[in-house]
Image (cartoon, rainbow, N blue to C red; front, side):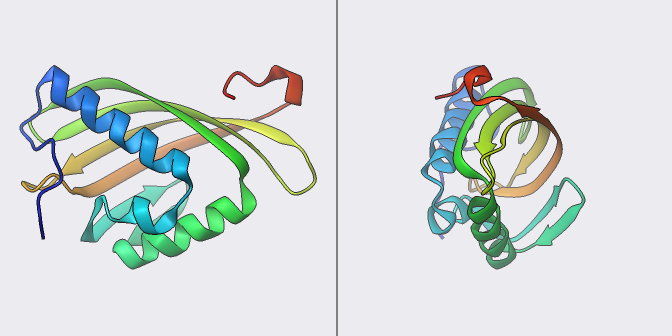
Length: 137
C-alpha cells in the first residue's frame, strides 16, 4: 500500500491537514472513497456499532448515507500526540420523513505509520432541529 500523507508523528500543521482531509472525504458521501483512508483491519466503535475491517466500514457507510440524507459535516481538531488525534464534529442531515437532525460527537483516532487510520472510536448524540435552524449548508 502507498502512504496516505500526512504521516505521523503529527505537527499542528499536519494534524490540521489530516482532519480537513477527513472532513472533505466524508462530505463526498462516497463510501468507496472514504473507506480507503482506513487500514484493511481497522477497528471502529460508532455509537453502539462495533465495526471491523475496511469492507465493514464501506457497508456501514452505505447504510449510513442511505438513511442520513443531505449530510453535511464539520470537524475540528481538539488535540493530538504522535499518531493519535481527538476530534470534535457536528453534522446535519434529514431522514426520509424530512426531519432534520444535528449530530454532535467526539472521535478518537489512531493512525498506522503509513498514515491510514487503524482505530476510530466515535461517541455521537442527535438533536432534532427545524430546517431553519441548520448551521451547516
